[in-house]
Image (cartoon, rainbow, N blue to C red; front, side):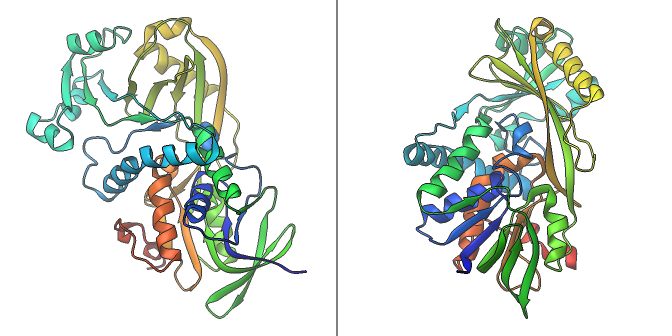
Length: 372
Protein backbone atom coordinates (compact mmCIF):
# COMPACT_ATOMS: atom_id res chain seq x y z
CA UNK A 1 0.00 0.00 0.00
CA UNK A 2 1.42 3.38 -1.03
CA UNK A 3 1.94 5.89 1.77
CA UNK A 4 0.62 9.41 1.36
CA UNK A 5 0.39 12.70 3.23
CA UNK A 6 -1.95 15.58 2.57
CA UNK A 7 0.73 17.91 3.96
CA UNK A 8 4.35 16.76 4.30
CA UNK A 9 6.68 18.87 6.45
CA UNK A 10 10.38 18.32 5.78
CA UNK A 11 12.24 19.07 9.01
CA UNK A 12 11.42 18.25 12.62
CA UNK A 13 13.11 21.23 14.20
CA UNK A 14 11.36 24.05 16.02
CA UNK A 15 9.81 25.51 12.84
CA UNK A 16 8.64 22.21 11.36
CA UNK A 17 7.10 21.06 14.65
CA UNK A 18 5.47 24.47 15.19
CA UNK A 19 3.85 24.28 11.75
CA UNK A 20 2.62 20.75 12.48
CA UNK A 21 1.13 21.95 15.79
CA UNK A 22 -0.59 24.92 14.15
CA UNK A 23 -2.12 22.68 11.47
CA UNK A 24 -3.24 20.18 14.10
CA UNK A 25 -4.82 22.94 16.17
CA UNK A 26 -6.82 23.92 13.09
CA UNK A 27 -8.09 20.39 12.59
CA UNK A 28 -5.97 19.30 9.62
CA UNK A 29 -5.50 15.58 9.07
CA UNK A 30 -2.92 13.80 6.98
CA UNK A 31 0.05 15.81 8.29
CA UNK A 32 3.44 14.05 8.28
CA UNK A 33 6.73 15.44 9.63
CA UNK A 34 9.92 13.96 8.18
CA UNK A 35 13.06 14.47 10.29
CA UNK A 36 16.45 13.18 9.15
CA UNK A 37 17.72 12.87 12.76
CA UNK A 38 15.73 13.44 15.96
CA UNK A 39 13.10 16.06 16.66
CA UNK A 40 14.74 19.33 17.72
CA UNK A 41 18.24 17.93 17.48
CA UNK A 42 20.02 20.58 15.43
CA UNK A 43 19.70 24.35 16.00
CA UNK A 44 17.38 24.19 18.98
CA UNK A 45 19.76 22.21 21.16
CA UNK A 46 22.05 25.24 21.52
CA UNK A 47 19.40 27.89 22.04
CA UNK A 48 19.18 29.48 25.48
CA UNK A 49 15.47 30.16 25.14
CA UNK A 50 15.75 33.96 25.29
CA UNK A 51 12.84 35.66 23.53
CA UNK A 52 14.25 39.11 23.06
CA UNK A 53 12.07 40.49 20.32
CA UNK A 54 13.91 43.26 18.51
CA UNK A 55 16.50 45.39 20.30
CA UNK A 56 16.29 49.18 19.93
CA UNK A 57 17.42 50.10 16.45
CA UNK A 58 15.59 47.17 14.84
CA UNK A 59 12.05 48.14 15.82
CA UNK A 60 10.13 48.96 12.69
CA UNK A 61 12.37 47.08 10.26
CA UNK A 62 11.02 43.83 8.74
CA UNK A 63 12.66 41.59 11.33
CA UNK A 64 11.60 43.80 14.22
CA UNK A 65 7.96 43.79 13.15
CA UNK A 66 7.96 40.00 12.72
CA UNK A 67 9.68 39.45 16.08
CA UNK A 68 7.23 41.72 17.92
CA UNK A 69 4.26 39.93 16.33
CA UNK A 70 5.63 36.53 17.35
CA UNK A 71 6.48 37.58 20.90
CA UNK A 72 2.93 38.85 21.31
CA UNK A 73 1.60 35.38 20.44
CA UNK A 74 3.83 33.43 22.84
CA UNK A 75 1.72 33.56 26.05
CA UNK A 76 -1.34 32.21 24.25
CA UNK A 77 0.66 29.51 22.43
CA UNK A 78 2.48 28.39 25.61
CA UNK A 79 -0.80 28.14 27.52
CA UNK A 80 -2.45 26.16 24.71
CA UNK A 81 0.47 23.74 24.48
CA UNK A 82 0.41 23.19 28.24
CA UNK A 83 -3.30 22.43 28.14
CA UNK A 84 -3.04 20.08 25.14
CA UNK A 85 0.06 18.14 26.18
CA UNK A 86 0.74 18.61 29.88
CA UNK A 87 4.22 19.87 28.93
CA UNK A 88 5.02 23.27 30.41
CA UNK A 89 7.48 25.26 28.24
CA UNK A 90 8.09 27.44 31.34
CA UNK A 91 7.50 30.76 29.66
CA UNK A 92 8.46 33.55 32.06
CA UNK A 93 8.97 37.28 31.84
CA UNK A 94 12.45 38.52 32.80
CA UNK A 95 13.21 41.77 31.00
CA UNK A 96 16.65 42.43 29.52
CA UNK A 97 19.63 44.70 30.03
CA UNK A 98 21.77 45.77 27.06
CA UNK A 99 25.13 46.50 28.65
CA UNK A 100 27.68 49.18 27.77
CA UNK A 101 31.33 48.76 28.70
CA UNK A 102 32.83 51.35 26.34
CA UNK A 103 31.90 54.92 25.43
CA UNK A 104 30.96 53.81 21.92
CA UNK A 105 28.63 51.14 23.28
CA UNK A 106 27.02 53.68 25.59
CA UNK A 107 26.52 56.14 22.74
CA UNK A 108 24.81 53.47 20.65
CA UNK A 109 22.42 52.47 23.43
CA UNK A 110 21.77 55.79 25.16
CA UNK A 111 18.89 56.93 22.98
CA UNK A 112 16.71 59.99 23.69
CA UNK A 113 13.88 59.28 26.19
CA UNK A 114 11.21 60.14 23.61
CA UNK A 115 12.68 57.52 21.27
CA UNK A 116 12.84 54.90 24.01
CA UNK A 117 9.21 55.48 24.96
CA UNK A 118 8.23 54.58 21.40
CA UNK A 119 9.60 51.09 22.06
CA UNK A 120 7.97 50.67 25.49
CA UNK A 121 6.85 53.09 28.25
CA UNK A 122 9.30 51.49 30.71
CA UNK A 123 12.29 51.33 28.37
CA UNK A 124 15.05 53.59 29.74
CA UNK A 125 18.77 54.13 30.12
CA UNK A 126 20.27 53.10 33.49
CA UNK A 127 23.33 54.83 34.84
CA UNK A 128 26.05 52.65 36.36
CA UNK A 129 24.69 53.13 39.90
CA UNK A 130 21.14 52.27 38.85
CA UNK A 131 22.37 49.22 36.98
CA UNK A 132 24.19 47.83 40.02
CA UNK A 133 21.19 48.53 42.25
CA UNK A 134 19.10 46.43 39.87
CA UNK A 135 21.76 43.75 39.31
CA UNK A 136 24.37 43.89 42.12
CA UNK A 137 26.52 41.09 40.65
CA UNK A 138 27.40 42.81 37.37
CA UNK A 139 30.88 44.21 36.82
CA UNK A 140 31.58 47.66 38.31
CA UNK A 141 33.40 48.52 35.06
CA UNK A 142 30.12 48.73 33.12
CA UNK A 143 29.10 52.29 32.25
CA UNK A 144 25.37 51.55 32.30
CA UNK A 145 22.68 49.64 30.44
CA UNK A 146 19.55 50.00 28.41
CA UNK A 147 16.59 48.38 30.17
CA UNK A 148 14.24 46.54 27.78
CA UNK A 149 11.18 45.19 29.59
CA UNK A 150 9.83 43.06 26.74
CA UNK A 151 12.20 40.09 27.20
CA UNK A 152 10.80 36.63 27.95
CA UNK A 153 12.37 33.19 28.37
CA UNK A 154 11.26 29.68 27.52
CA UNK A 155 12.81 26.21 27.91
CA UNK A 156 13.54 25.39 24.27
CA UNK A 157 13.68 21.56 24.58
CA UNK A 158 10.29 21.53 26.27
CA UNK A 159 8.83 23.88 23.70
CA UNK A 160 9.80 21.72 20.73
CA UNK A 161 8.61 18.60 22.57
CA UNK A 162 5.29 20.30 23.27
CA UNK A 163 4.89 21.34 19.62
CA UNK A 164 5.61 17.80 18.43
CA UNK A 165 3.41 16.11 21.05
CA UNK A 166 0.47 18.45 20.38
CA UNK A 167 0.72 17.64 16.69
CA UNK A 168 0.97 13.89 17.32
CA UNK A 169 -1.98 13.89 19.72
CA UNK A 170 -4.06 15.52 16.99
CA UNK A 171 -3.15 12.84 14.45
CA UNK A 172 0.05 14.08 12.82
CA UNK A 173 2.75 11.52 12.08
CA UNK A 174 6.23 12.38 13.37
CA UNK A 175 8.76 10.24 11.53
CA UNK A 176 12.34 10.45 12.79
CA UNK A 177 15.50 9.21 11.04
CA UNK A 178 13.78 9.55 7.65
CA UNK A 179 15.81 11.44 5.03
CA UNK A 180 14.35 13.01 1.89
CA UNK A 181 16.53 12.01 -1.06
CA UNK A 182 14.51 13.02 -4.10
CA UNK A 183 11.23 14.35 -5.44
CA UNK A 184 8.79 13.47 -8.18
CA UNK A 185 7.15 16.30 -10.12
CA UNK A 186 4.32 16.74 -12.55
CA UNK A 187 4.76 20.17 -14.13
CA UNK A 188 4.79 22.78 -11.38
CA UNK A 189 3.56 20.37 -8.70
CA UNK A 190 5.53 17.99 -6.48
CA UNK A 191 3.64 14.68 -6.41
CA UNK A 192 5.86 12.56 -4.17
CA UNK A 193 8.92 12.60 -1.92
CA UNK A 194 11.47 9.83 -2.24
CA UNK A 195 12.79 9.07 1.23
CA UNK A 196 15.12 6.62 2.94
CA UNK A 197 11.94 4.86 4.06
CA UNK A 198 10.24 4.71 0.66
CA UNK A 199 7.96 6.81 -1.55
CA UNK A 200 5.51 9.27 0.02
CA UNK A 201 2.78 10.75 -2.19
CA UNK A 202 2.05 14.34 -1.16
CA UNK A 203 -0.61 16.99 -1.61
CA UNK A 204 1.39 19.95 -0.27
CA UNK A 205 4.95 20.28 1.03
CA UNK A 206 6.53 22.58 3.60
CA UNK A 207 10.33 22.79 3.40
CA UNK A 208 11.50 23.61 6.93
CA UNK A 209 14.80 21.76 7.04
CA UNK A 210 16.85 24.40 8.83
CA UNK A 211 20.51 24.51 7.89
CA UNK A 212 19.95 21.70 5.36
CA UNK A 213 17.33 23.69 3.42
CA UNK A 214 19.78 24.87 0.76
CA UNK A 215 20.83 21.32 -0.01
CA UNK A 216 17.27 19.99 -0.06
CA UNK A 217 16.08 22.96 -2.09
CA UNK A 218 18.22 21.75 -4.99
CA UNK A 219 16.20 18.53 -5.09
CA UNK A 220 13.17 20.74 -5.84
CA UNK A 221 15.06 22.86 -8.36
CA UNK A 222 15.12 25.81 -5.93
CA UNK A 223 17.89 28.30 -5.20
CA UNK A 224 17.76 28.76 -1.44
CA UNK A 225 20.98 30.37 -0.17
CA UNK A 226 20.69 28.96 3.36
CA UNK A 227 23.56 27.31 5.20
CA UNK A 228 24.74 26.39 8.69
CA UNK A 229 25.69 28.96 11.32
CA UNK A 230 27.24 27.26 14.33
CA UNK A 231 26.26 28.64 17.71
CA UNK A 232 28.03 27.51 20.87
CA UNK A 233 26.67 27.82 24.40
CA UNK A 234 28.26 27.20 27.79
CA UNK A 235 26.08 26.10 30.71
CA UNK A 236 27.05 26.89 34.30
CA UNK A 237 25.57 26.09 37.71
CA UNK A 238 25.49 29.20 39.89
CA UNK A 239 24.92 28.15 43.48
CA UNK A 240 24.70 31.71 44.75
CA UNK A 241 22.72 34.69 43.41
CA UNK A 242 23.44 35.34 39.76
CA UNK A 243 21.23 37.71 37.75
CA UNK A 244 17.49 38.18 37.36
CA UNK A 245 17.45 39.78 33.91
CA UNK A 246 18.83 38.56 30.61
CA UNK A 247 22.11 40.37 29.92
CA UNK A 248 23.34 41.29 26.44
CA UNK A 249 26.54 42.81 25.18
CA UNK A 250 26.73 42.83 21.43
CA UNK A 251 25.86 39.35 20.17
CA UNK A 252 26.72 37.65 23.48
CA UNK A 253 24.28 37.06 26.31
CA UNK A 254 23.81 35.59 29.78
CA UNK A 255 20.49 34.03 30.70
CA UNK A 256 19.75 32.73 34.21
CA UNK A 257 17.27 29.86 34.16
CA UNK A 258 14.64 28.95 36.76
CA UNK A 259 16.58 25.81 37.79
CA UNK A 260 19.66 27.80 38.87
CA UNK A 261 21.69 27.16 35.74
CA UNK A 262 23.09 29.96 33.60
CA UNK A 263 23.31 29.84 29.81
CA UNK A 264 26.13 31.86 28.25
CA UNK A 265 26.10 32.29 24.49
CA UNK A 266 26.39 32.48 21.71
CA UNK A 267 29.09 32.32 19.13
CA UNK A 268 28.27 32.77 15.45
CA UNK A 269 30.56 30.77 13.17
CA UNK A 270 30.36 29.68 9.56
CA UNK A 271 31.56 26.16 10.22
CA UNK A 272 30.07 23.78 7.67
CA UNK A 273 27.97 21.06 9.37
CA UNK A 274 30.31 20.52 12.32
CA UNK A 275 28.36 20.60 15.60
CA UNK A 276 31.30 20.10 17.95
CA UNK A 277 32.08 22.85 20.50
CA UNK A 278 35.58 24.32 20.24
CA UNK A 279 38.14 25.35 22.82
CA UNK A 280 38.18 28.88 21.43
CA UNK A 281 34.39 29.14 21.60
CA UNK A 282 34.20 27.87 25.18
CA UNK A 283 37.04 30.20 26.23
CA UNK A 284 35.36 33.23 24.63
CA UNK A 285 32.04 32.57 26.35
CA UNK A 286 33.63 31.77 29.72
CA UNK A 287 35.67 34.97 29.61
CA UNK A 288 32.59 37.02 28.69
CA UNK A 289 30.62 35.49 31.58
CA UNK A 290 33.25 36.28 34.21
CA UNK A 291 34.01 39.76 32.88
CA UNK A 292 30.29 40.61 32.91
CA UNK A 293 29.31 38.91 36.19
CA UNK A 294 32.51 38.27 38.21
CA UNK A 295 30.69 35.93 40.62
CA UNK A 296 30.27 33.47 37.76
CA UNK A 297 33.99 32.76 38.08
CA UNK A 298 33.00 30.55 41.02
CA UNK A 299 30.16 28.83 39.12
CA UNK A 300 30.50 25.16 38.19
CA UNK A 301 31.03 24.33 34.52
CA UNK A 302 28.33 21.89 33.43
CA UNK A 303 28.67 21.46 29.69
CA UNK A 304 29.06 23.13 26.30
CA UNK A 305 26.76 22.70 23.31
CA UNK A 306 26.82 23.63 19.68
CA UNK A 307 23.89 23.81 17.29
CA UNK A 308 23.53 24.62 13.61
CA UNK A 309 21.28 27.59 12.86
CA UNK A 310 19.97 28.19 9.32
CA UNK A 311 21.45 31.46 8.05
CA UNK A 312 20.20 33.00 4.81
CA UNK A 313 22.29 35.12 2.47
CA UNK A 314 20.67 38.39 3.62
CA UNK A 315 20.07 37.35 7.23
CA UNK A 316 16.27 37.33 6.96
CA UNK A 317 14.02 34.26 7.08
CA UNK A 318 12.46 32.71 4.00
CA UNK A 319 8.71 32.32 4.54
CA UNK A 320 6.31 31.87 1.65
CA UNK A 321 5.57 29.99 -1.55
CA UNK A 322 8.46 28.41 -3.40
CA UNK A 323 8.95 30.14 -6.77
CA UNK A 324 7.81 28.00 -9.68
CA UNK A 325 6.12 25.35 -7.54
CA UNK A 326 2.38 25.46 -6.92
CA UNK A 327 2.25 23.23 -3.85
CA UNK A 328 5.52 23.89 -1.98
CA UNK A 329 6.06 26.38 0.85
CA UNK A 330 9.36 27.40 2.42
CA UNK A 331 9.91 28.20 6.11
CA UNK A 332 13.61 28.43 6.92
CA UNK A 333 16.56 30.78 7.41
CA UNK A 334 15.58 31.95 10.91
CA UNK A 335 19.22 31.90 12.11
CA UNK A 336 19.33 32.31 15.91
CA UNK A 337 15.68 33.39 16.11
CA UNK A 338 13.89 30.14 15.28
CA UNK A 339 12.37 29.68 18.74
CA UNK A 340 11.29 33.32 18.93
CA UNK A 341 9.73 33.31 15.46
CA UNK A 342 8.11 29.88 15.66
CA UNK A 343 4.56 31.02 16.59
CA UNK A 344 4.20 33.66 13.88
CA UNK A 345 5.92 31.55 11.22
CA UNK A 346 3.67 28.57 11.91
CA UNK A 347 0.57 30.73 11.79
CA UNK A 348 1.60 32.35 8.49
CA UNK A 349 2.46 29.03 6.86
CA UNK A 350 -0.85 27.49 7.95
CA UNK A 351 -2.69 30.51 6.53
CA UNK A 352 -0.93 30.10 3.17
CA UNK A 353 -1.68 26.37 3.08
CA UNK A 354 -5.35 27.20 3.62
CA UNK A 355 -5.31 29.87 0.91
CA UNK A 356 -5.67 32.72 3.39
CA UNK A 357 -3.75 35.98 3.59
CA UNK A 358 -1.45 35.94 6.65
CA UNK A 359 -1.93 38.59 9.33
CA UNK A 360 1.74 39.61 9.03
CA UNK A 361 3.44 41.10 5.97
CA UNK A 362 5.58 38.37 4.41
CA UNK A 363 6.82 40.41 1.45
CA UNK A 364 10.32 41.00 2.94
CA UNK A 365 10.66 37.25 3.54
CA UNK A 366 9.48 36.00 0.14
CA UNK A 367 11.76 33.12 -0.99
CA UNK A 368 11.44 34.42 -4.56
CA UNK A 369 13.66 37.39 -3.67
CA UNK A 370 16.71 35.20 -4.31
CA UNK A 371 15.35 33.87 -7.59
CA UNK A 372 14.98 37.47 -8.75
